[in-house]
Length: 370
Image (cartoon, rainbow, N blue to C red; front, side):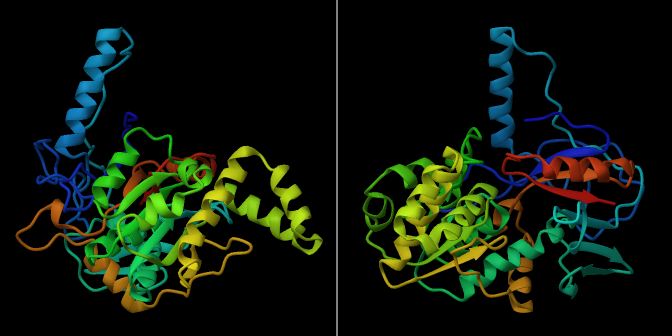
């Protein structure tokens, strides 16, 4: 867990949950931190600097890890877990558009005169308990909601810890459907992530690392069919390794099976693993006559999902809300977010774009607030 700066904050509303619940924050949204003064600026209703944070369970794990580092003599400095109050008003949140190397104009939200306006969906209904950072993720959330709405039965997801994949997993589980989640190779090394995903989608849903889907010949039987359900929809979330591998295979397709096999053989191991795992996930649906859809961008050789509609955005928005009288545990849809506050330091826009461009980002998604 990284330390924070005055303008940068790692955020998460996730927690280790009981077997019948999904990822969400602890019962106290300020995660055990007290405040001596209120922010100096007005925020989107429900937004406070401590509106997202670490759950009590995760703070306990972090404390135990710190004590272990002290015991081993490897603790350089104590962890900082408290959010910091912004100095300037925060009225907008943005994702990073890697294609342009700038803040996204489509995946963004601004708040003024009591109305939140999204770059794609326009004016949004009031959602007082949804932090502004989450509204910037409405696009990926709506894409996941669209897949759940347009499908039935069990779902298999490759790239389950990506925003689109997380939305599919959590919304499908909330609807009482079984989900087989596969964590892609770029995220699977994150400590504790496999257990968190298994808590978000408890049995008979299941979660497996990419290597399991890629190597295990009986993946279909051991990971999908065993609970006694059949996968009707396979969701493939784009990753760089998968896209690279798929492009090489499709380019070789005119040369026949041997050319395609040779193309796969010449790929780096991470790309071969991603392609094999994604194909294994796709097969769980195609073997049953089901469909395969891609989210998060195009992948050669895989069909794109239908574009989400406004009703999907509304579904995702409501799923991110904390019901009246409830707490963070009652939200159906949550994400891992890394917030860069450019309201205080404009230079953090460039830094956020730089960080978003780095390989192996990990499961937290970068959101820039201004």
